[in-house]
Length: 131
Image 1 (cartoon, rainbow, N blue to C red):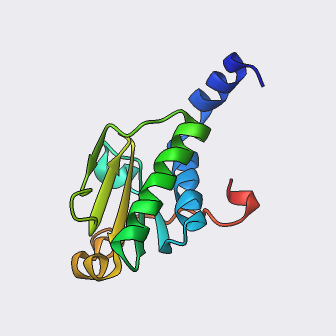
Image 2 (spheres, rainbow, N blue to C red):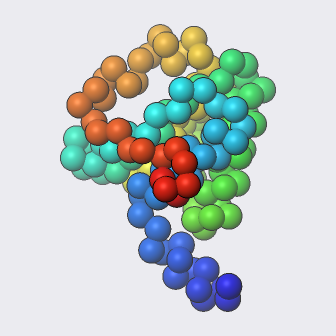
Image 3 (cartoon, rainbow, N blue to C red):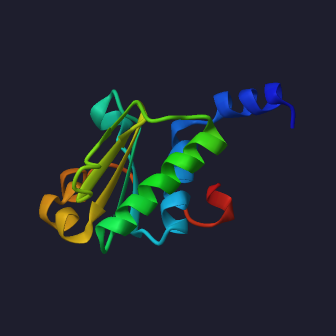
């Protein structure tokens, strides 16, 4: 694939496809209970949330690093902002139209983001058909 073809492929990738890339990357590093939500109609400025958790801060960091790497390699994206790297209990990766939340399990349970977004449709991401 030429650089021009790669650039065109990246530009054509939808926010839903980028969310699936993030979900698969998190899954590759053993994130748990990965959820992809379509929040476009609810929020207006963000299209999708990816929410996942890990059992310890070291694993949170590994998941964050893998998501960043895969979104850069496969979608040409770098996060606009990253929050939470100081304590690794809740890391937020802001890609503009995609927000990735990686939690420690107990922090995710405490904040319950998925309870706040119960009316957001879920995006299927597992399996080859979802890619």
